[in-house]
Image (tube, rainbow, N blue to C red):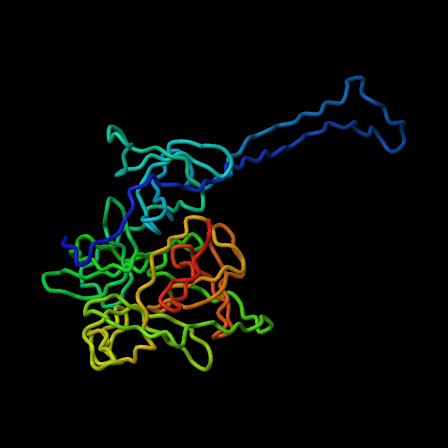
Amino acid sequence: MATINSCFFNNGRLKRKKIEDDRSSRVSSTLHSPQEESAHEPVSQSNKPTKLRIICRTQNSKPAIFQKGARVEVRTDDEGYHGARYAATVIGSAGEDKVLVQYDTLTTDDQKQQLVEKVHDSTIRPIPSISVREHRFNMLEEVDAWYHDGWWLGVVNKVLDKFKYAVYFWTTNEEIEFHHLNLRSHQEFINEKWVSSFSRPKVAENARLKKMKLQTAGNTLMVDYLSGLNVEIAYGTGRYLSTWYPAVILRPVSNQMYLVSYRTLKSNDGPELVEEELDVLSIRPAPPIIQRAQQFKPNDAVDAWDVNGWRIGQIRTAMDFKYEVYFWATDSVVEFQHAYLRPHQDFIHGAWLGGYDE
């Protein structure tokens, strides 16, 4: 596996969220009442006292995925590991909303034993169903790549010879080469079913939400671009800038024009990536990578990875690292998982503004 661009990953300890240990008791009771002797004779009470028998059965209501011995994948959103998943085995309960897992490929700091951690239920899913991919992956197809002892979500950026691919990771703005055998089709576990490629269902339309005009640096000029520089290309309709698409500078065309190659947009007549000459005002450098380990909050400004680009929006609701994001450009609300979001940043007068404060 050859590296096209060096990938930035921090060597930190993984943090996890936890799962719920919920037990319920079912109580059934049998009450022995006096019998009536006859409609014409007085009712006689038995000398024996009334007996109340209570049968208690403790039932474990936790799904099988959280039971001891279950094979799972654990997601992390730590900086440098954003959205990666690691195989593990559940080895016990760890209290409310938590279980204890032992990782297959992660070890302790001294590398003498397998890493054991408490994790939250929102970070756990079953091991995906195994599907053998006999034919080649396609351009712009979402895949999981085996990298640094875990599965990393990316998109096929180039289909190369000898069953190799260049995979683009939007969380790090990097492109890395992988062999076919080190990739798998991306699947999401939605409503207890495996769905190939991530499905972002439309949650709601809310025309009453006030439109927000994005403040952009329209007069900021970008100069001295170098060939091979990672950039993002602005797209929008009307008065709204709606999306940033990742691209790379190929070469300057004139003083204010550059030829760029999009990383995730394919031409209509073939598998080649789109190349386009653009004015400098439509281009900005790729923003610094900010990976949000904490859950986003309502009203946070975010970019959501959707349809091969970063759509600009705002968190409407947040729960268990899933969000409803409002897009003012289309006046719509769409649901996203945490790994598909990044803090929104603006490039104004040569400086990055935004992100988030810890």
